[in-house]
Image (tube, rainbow, N blue to C red; front, side):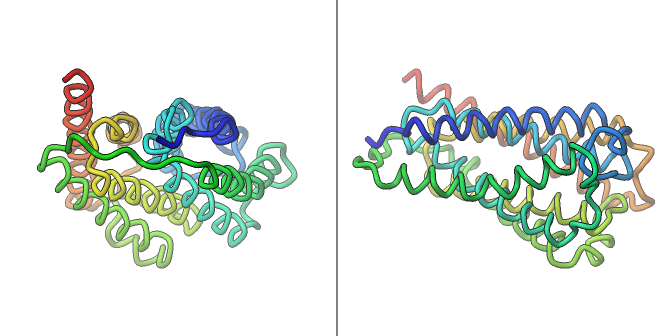
Length: 267
């Protein structure tokens, strides 16, 4: 079994702290991003939605930081790396929207310039170490695995649309998004979608624990954000209903997967 390296754990501990702080600034301070974030985000529902993604990423990253084996950490490592790279690209494309005269703007830019190479260094260092992935002895429930595939593909498709054609996404999203916020949300959705597909491919209930916890956090936080800032919603009741149903299913998938992981670790 290949253990996680001290470098990988350290890098993810730092990233977990950053995700926790960013989530708090966005989710709790959704109405004050003009003063307390790297760029002004409107409406507040968008800020809270991004905050939910950061807090869910915090759960996923912290799980990887505490993992003793590469097999346990891997479901989080590649999705987090993809999100970081996509957010760097989005930042550079929309650099004029960032408040680079403030500490928050400079910190955002510096962080996302440094994160991808640090992650690449940690991953390469990990993969150079001897060891292998242990053989799978238990499997996820079939319903969880099938649902993860569907949800993963749906998030990849929605994320790609938000990234590539933010204007077209206005027709299917429950509230108005700017090109920058559309692409930021799309970056997270593509990464979480990849995490779901990796979990389905690995088909290991024990290694799914971290992703299951992140799934539960993400689904619940997105629903809470919608409830708190429901006045920001648009006129499309169908889009809102689909949005609520999707995050509800994500929450249930995480809960079912977590129960399967707990049962497997006890048997």
